[in-house]
Length: 578
Image (cartoon, rainbow, N blue to C red):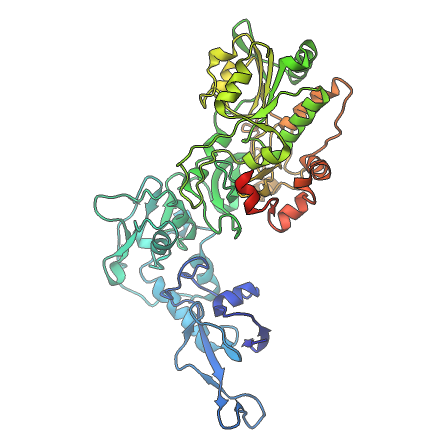
């Protein structure tokens, strides 16, 4: 196998890896700015310099030349090489800042050059705490600057588009943002204008940066030149908790990180998954923070004689139980939801089976033509495939309307699916029926319901979804409810404020905790009224049962979903026919 020697340590490699990526893959720390594994390699920041050489091949002896000590003679390149663009070759020798004073000096000089016109506004910069320039200057930079002249000032607070703000003074011209619009989103909306120390990224005159993936440029900007209009000046990275999750705004299921502070979601960023979304996600998936924080249903509600009143959990459980007992099985309709998790739909399905209720359906929410063939899909819900694999009967909108409006149906129990807002039925179609709506946010369906049960959403519980390609992935609780505690739930992330904050801190309070529980837990409590306890204590236990009774989910568990990450349940061919 080919070998490479880095700082006098031998490594083996396969294929033709780039030296920088090979070092990163092997856990070695090395500075860089412009390189990104999913973009082309311009090597324009010059921060990843290394000394590189190859052994001398003797054509006469058909072997490597050896010195007087019997070691290979190495011929180094005459100048330093950029590791990001240097392809590894058999026998190559690399010296980094750990073994070469020349490389160490080059790193210092490059950083000094980059910082010549860069404003030292770290205390007010949104990138502070997660800024590669800040970190690498501390680790590899000079102790001071020899530059004694006035810095070049460039435009500040330029609104490039509806979601991205540019502070041109901070830009180091790494061109990651420009390459993103050329190579990934292919909108070509950004370019570099002006020359020398006056250049910076910009859009064409009369246009704006409205790329549906524009906020990815904020993620990959290494110096805080591009910032999010929504998140700008909201919080610092050390104040927030970072929790892995799944984007539920469409069927792609992009892997995300959910950033919370004081039990509010402040930003959503993509999490790498080569099988689903690489390093990217669409902008509208990030705007889901509003659904997670605002317009929430908190505490059960009932409509009595036309008035909407708050109710207790016990009253809500008894009311549903009494209604299930009052009507015959054929008079009851259960509506599952492709917006809800696999676990919630399974428990709803099991609850119906326990009562011998045959009317259990769900209706996909697909807008043909709304997808872009990249990360935005026609399917507006995250778990359509999951409902299909569970065996819920699938109905079109008109077919579901026929079931809901049938005169024989007296009681409707539905998971989170705004069928009134979607236009499947009107609020008047539900008149005369007792409607139980389990949802996390107020909407047109909740307004028309007789009993509203607030349930935990995708960032308030661990649960799983099957995306349009048949891959099951799971979320982890990022927000506390009134009934959960970050310090007691070992799966929840615990940040600095959680460990050391007090009630006197600005960002430690209980005011943003919602009075809700997971839908499966509410159904478990209703079943307990009949002494028919399902025995579930967590969604992890529910998934264990699903895997044991449904062949599509055989072998699936949360540990596997975390390690792989996500599990492909069905082949592409079956996805097309599912």
